Length: 110
Length: 119
Image 1 (tube, each protein chain N blue to C red):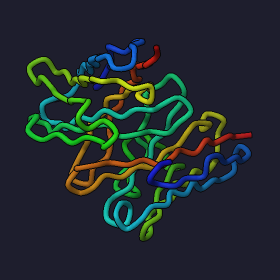
Image 2 (spheres, rainbow over the protein chains, first blue to last red):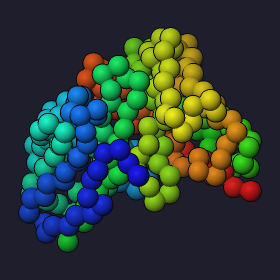
Image 3 (cartoon, rainbow over the protein chains, first blue to last red):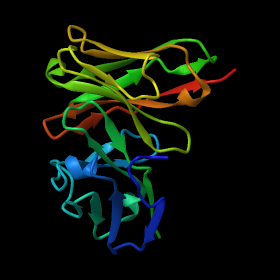
Image 4 (spheres, rainbow over the protein chains, first blue to last red):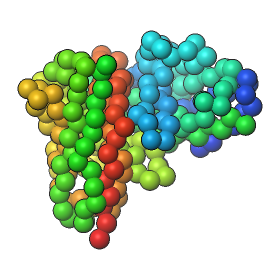
């Protein structure tokens, strides 16, 4: 069982919006920064969001992140079939003595 | 183009050892902390270990502490993971990834190498 809690699956239609939640505690999310990753089968995981809400260059603004207390959220607007993937939240202790991930959310774009 | 490429995976019996490698190119390897992250079949991501940019500090997940050793050779732009006393539950795809501070996130990932522990 993962330290951070995510819904196992979500689905939405093309063009719609989805929000994926990531719930933790004061010992992880509540005291550090959250990042989000996209995993497609057979490919390298991709960083989508870092520092709670920042997008790396090349990541479209359809992807957004937010954090409040011990929870974080990944938002995806204008869903495309290419967004079908597994999404993971993650966070590390400020001393980098440990990092944890959520259990992952499988997104289906119907 | 910056990339990291893992190698060394395979099928190994329980109790045996295996060493994974991660070759970096296209960026200044010695400036980055490096990690191993794994994903067991049907499971989520699990952080395994981190090594500081200069190799002076290492941290491990409790699940591998005392069995796995992370190391690096900055002259060869290569990261390693020595895995000893392997268990069935170590079966996973192993990814290497750069980590960026001070707010810590995994920036560049490889495609992974599959380790199967089976008798």
